[in-house]
Length: 152
Length: 243
Image 1 (cartoon, rainbow over the protein chains, first blue to last red):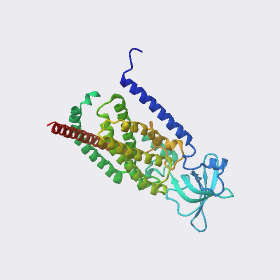
Image 2: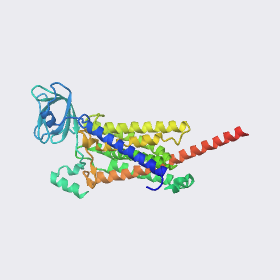
Image 3: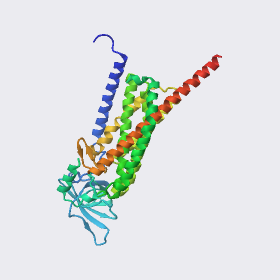
Image 4: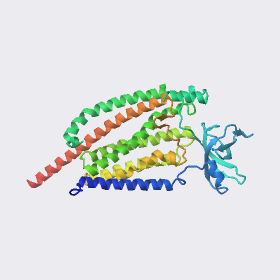
């Protein structure tokens, strides 16, 4: 290298090194948090590593189509929350949010009972990232997908 | 770029652009929001509450874009010592904070009907709240530096760069971690949004960005005017002491 480094370049190098270090630290922190920062457990996680009975946990997944049943009292719901691999039966007594329905996402707050059922105190609806106008909802899945694709 | 290191030249351009940007941005935003309230279709699951999308998502993007602008300006200030960079970063901080707050408030109003809760501590909501706090901290730091007469202090710029770490965390929070907030509807070349929502969202984002630009120019002019007034006062005080 010819001559001393310009002050401007020295500052640039210092800032870039600091930025790289900060980004690395941020990524490491995010990686370390990958379990702790999740808002809920998936059914597979509950099945593989069941939380102790009675501990407050959240369970999130899809409400299995055809599994939703209303009890005789009219306010007790029972349904199955599943992901690709596992299914967890859930019981809930109360008012479910409007967007809670079969085939849609749900986050249940509650605890595991000794028989493996999840007793929910509260339900939160988790919707997907699709935005489809109401007029398109009666189309079949394939029609709607084509329609959405046309508009891309 | 250093052509604008001369504040007089920058001020001429800024004076020319401020009013047209603010007026056209406000008019366009009003038009898009009226369409969003009356013309946009209801959503298949969410029904009418989907209309808040046209405020919530542009506010979120601009709050994040604002911090990216602060980080770029801070880098320019620290490395190239550009005289307007620090002023630009300071000017962005307030509208950025307002958009972050707007995003959180509209998100909360939307969360109640859509999810069944005003607030949860999931990754996306928490990292967005952290962004609002970062903005408030940046404003406090920059004000303190100006009050102490150290308006060239590098501390706000360093903070602006460090805070940029939060931006990818906000973006990836819904991908890295399970969260109640859904993953992004738009990614490179792919949209899960039907055309009316997408077009409305992009128009609203454009309109809010134009307003954002107008506010930043107006605030930069204010900061420059304050600096000039202060310099003049100081000069006069020194002359009085000499005389």
